[in-house]
Amino acid sequence: MRNILIGGAWPYANGPLHIGHIAALLPGDVLARYHRAIGDNVYFVSGSDCHGTPVAIRAKKENKTPGEISDFYHEEFAECFKKLGFSYDVYTKTSAPAHKNFVKEFHRKLYESGYVYEKETPQAYCESCGTFLADRYVSGKCPECGKDTRGDQCDFCGAVLEPETLAEPVCAVCGKPVSFKNSRHLYIAVTRLSRELKELVDNHPEWRKNAVIFTNRYIDEGLKDRALTRDLEWGIEVPKEGYEKKTIYIWAENVLGYLSASWEAAGKRGGDFRELWGKDAKHYYVHGKDNIPFHTIILPALLLASGENWHLPDRIVSSEYLTLEGRKISTSRNYAIWVRDLLKNYEADSIRYFFLANGPEKKDTDFSWREYVNSHNGELLGAYGNFVNRSLLFIQKYCGGIVPRGVEDSDLNERTEKLFGSVGRQIENGAFRDAIDEIFAFVRSANRFFDTQQPWITRNTDKRACDNTLYQCVQIIANLAVLLQPFLPFSSEKVRGWLRLSSKWERQSIPTGFQLPEVEILFRRIDKKIIETETEKLKSIL
Image 1 (cartoon, rainbow, N blue to C red):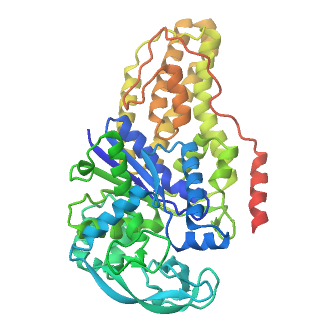
Image 2: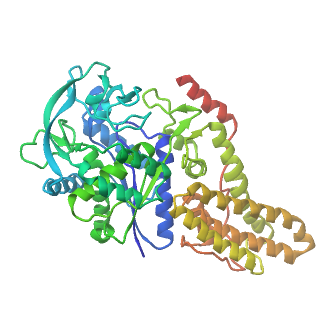
Image 3: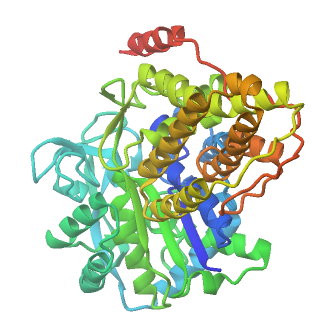
């Protein structure tokens, strides 16, 4: 039994979740459910990122405290993840006492490591807003490519930036020019860790291609030391004398949430936290493309600089971007599909299926309502739901709900065994689209088998053949329920309940004479009229 840590990126608690977040984070739940099914000791953790300037600015606009704003969205996030079936062992928040205490203790030791030093540096200040600004809240022209960008990273050329290097810097909130005031801060010497960080990426060619390319680019262009502290009020206090009025820079504490949350999870179950972070564990980090440097440069730099032999990332599962009806998602213009709204009208497994089968795994992909409805009606309902329901309802109607006698099919058993192995390997390798495609190829072959055998005819002409067909179909359904459980937990749990199956990742078998309970429709058709209705809503925003 292996110790597995799966860290899902921490969404920023200054606004609601949109479909881009879900597309990037769903693979984490698939990994967690799969690893539990094969018997591993899984810690699946995440939380809400509650500190920093964006939360403080929103709070000021709404005449609330930053804590009120972040707590509101944290609760919404937790509820959305629960409804979508995310099986977190711990979903916490960076403003939680356990996280704050863990981070302060980590930083106390970090400051003694020899990798941390003090430096006076210019920090962006907006006179109009009356506050220092986080780097991402300074806008201007990139010194590398000349495109409009924010102060921490250019979305066009990917350069990691400092706000004072931007041309024509302005406040991203009010649009007024910013000034720069010198302030003394703690810095981590990332440049002294270049060799170790290069070895990390070179030793992990199995990382997603975008993670390897971006990380090598950051290293080849020259890493920069990063500030650990900031002149911001809303955050975690710096545990060092003389820094009482400063807070820990958000990037230097939110990634430590993987440690604090797994420490909390280990405490709850009596697990060995240090063993989880030891050399024999396996760690996955699941996030979007824009979070790559925080997981391949920043987090490893903090872990290495601490000198405590923390386990470094094994797998970087970094998605590409998701667009919406051909356009970039824009939260500022409200051009997005909010997860809370999506969950009010559509089934969780339907949402999960679309983003796992059509998600931005290797390249940018687009969400369109037409594709979503067609995917649900054609594949999820038309192929899988149809096979399950017509097979089991046939048995209920013509066999009294009792699984009829059949003959063990060695070819089917062998194919199923191979499918468990193949799908499992693809999940562990981060190839979720390939995994679910392979399962649905099996679903389509099962439908062809049902059609070819024609049990609606053989029940009158060859009962033995009819019984054998239905017996084989039940075996297929039982195995599909387990194979699809990491992807479609709600419908799989329903089928596993009907057939009294565990979630153990192995070939399943249902005996002759098994009594089926009342079976209900697995998925319901989505009316195609909603395509026009939903697209018109989006057009009205533009």
